[in-house]
Length: 81
Image 1 (spheres, rainbow, N blue to C red):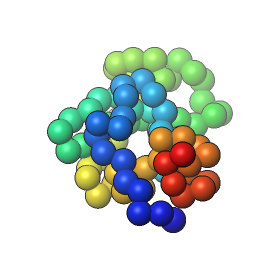
Image 2: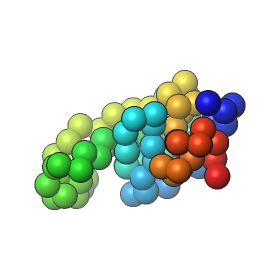
Image 3: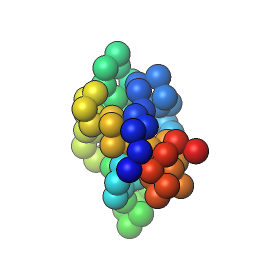
Image 4: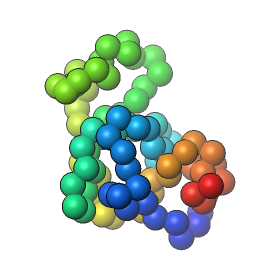
């Protein structure tokens, strides 16, 4: 794992990002946090239409952002590109 860290300015509402094991979609961006929904491939895509969403929005704080990657490839490589 690298020392790379995403910051709120690296996220874009409606765009996916990845953690060590899952895909998430950003739904809101704050100064030190972001809010996202967990994307599960087996769910009906209509669950991800919103707001409001049929799935819970989760807040990622500044400590959680250390484990976020901008692409699935970066997640596997452990770095941003």
